[in-house]
Image (cartoon, rainbow, N blue to C red; front, top):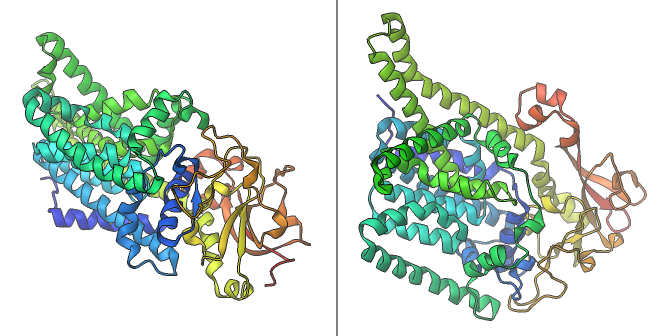
Length: 552
C-alpha cells in the first residue's frame, strides 16, 4: 500500500524542507541579486543598484512582479534589512510548499496512489527543487504556476489551469507559456468558445494591472512581457550576447541537481512518446494521444526539452519551471517499470523462484531509488553550502559590533568588489543606508549595474543593451573603506592579490571558499564527509579593511 499523506501532512513535510532552503541556500545566479533583490531594496528603502533592463529606454523587467514580493514585507521592513530579505525568502518557501502539495494531490487524483507517493518523495528529496523553491526569480514563479496549472489540468479544473498558465507567462516569465500548450490545445479541442472567452478575460484581468503599474514606474506606456519577447527574439541581439553553452550543459546540470531522477525521467519521456506516436500512426488520429494514460504527465516536459535544450543560450534557472515535471516523469518511470515486472511475473514461463524475486523488487525498488536520490541530493546541497556560502557569510560580518564601532561618525561607507561582484548577495546585507557597494576594475569586461537615480522614470546615462563595458561604473579604490575579495593564486594586473598589500589592507574576516579549478570535479560537486575537506582545495574569501580609512 502506497504512502499518501493528507494535504496538511504533505504540506508540513515540504514546508520544513523549503524553509531550510530559504535560510541556508546560496544565491546561485547574479540575475537574482541585480534584477530582483536590488530593485526590491530600492522599492523598500529608496536605494539600490539598477541594471539596464530597468532603464525606461528598454523596460524589459516588471515592477509589478517586484511589488508582489515587496508589499507583504513593506509594513514590517525594519532597519535590520536582512530580516526583510529572509522574510521574502520564507514567503517564497511557503508558496512553493503549497504549490507542490497541490501538485501532489492532483497527481494522486489523476495517476493513482503509487505515482503520487513517488512524486512527493522525489519533490522532497530533490536538490533542484531545494535550489529553485526559494529563489527570487520569475522562473521560480513560473514553477509555482506550472504546478498549479498542470495540477488543475489533471483534476479537470479548466479555469484554474488557464489562469495559472496566463499568470505564469505575464507575471513571471513569458516563455513559460510553452508548458501550457497542451492545456490550451486540449481545451480548445473540447470547448473552443468558452476557453477563448476565459483566456481573454484572464489576459485582460492580469495584463491591465501590469501595464498600469509598470507604466507608472517607467513614466511611459509599458507592457514588460511583450518587451522581453521582442528583445529576445526580434531585436537582433538577444540573450546570446551573455554567452552560449554546449548541448551538454543542461545534461550536466540535471545530473548534478536531479541525479538519477533525470535519467529515469528521460526514459519515461522517450518510451511514452514512442508509444503514443505509434498509436497515432496506427489510428491516423492526432488526438488519439489523449487516450494514453501517461502522456499528460510528460507532454509539457517533452515540449520544454525540445525548445530549450536546443537553444544556444542556456542558464540553470531556465530549468526551474520543469523541475517538478522531472519528478513526476521519474515517478511515472517507476510505474512503467512496475508494469513490466508485473507482466513478467504473470508469464507462465517464469519459474516460481524468479516470481518470488520480482514481486518484492517492484514493490521496494522505487523507494530505494527515492532514498538514493535524496542521499545524493543532500550531498549536493552540503557541497554547495560548504563550498560557496562564504560569499553570504562575509557580508553578514559587516553588522558585527566591532564593525559598527569602526565606522562611527562616517556618513558614507564604501564596500568595494572586483572580480567577486557577481556573488554580492544584495544591499539587504549592507547594515545601513550609509553603506554603498562600489565596483573596482577586474577582468570582467561586461556591463555592471549602477545606483538608482531619484526616480525610476529617469533614463540613466551610460547604459546599453549590448553588455558592453561602461568605465563610469568603476570607483577609486583608495576611497574604499572595505574590500570583499577572494584570494587568487593567479593574479593579473586588474586582479592583484590585495591581501598581500599589508600597508594598505588588513584582514578583518576570512572564510574558506572552494577553489573550483584546483579541486576534483566529483568531490567539489558532492560532499563526502572528511574526504571532501582533505581532497578539495580551498582559498580564502576575505573582508579587507583600508588601513588609511578604517582603524579596527
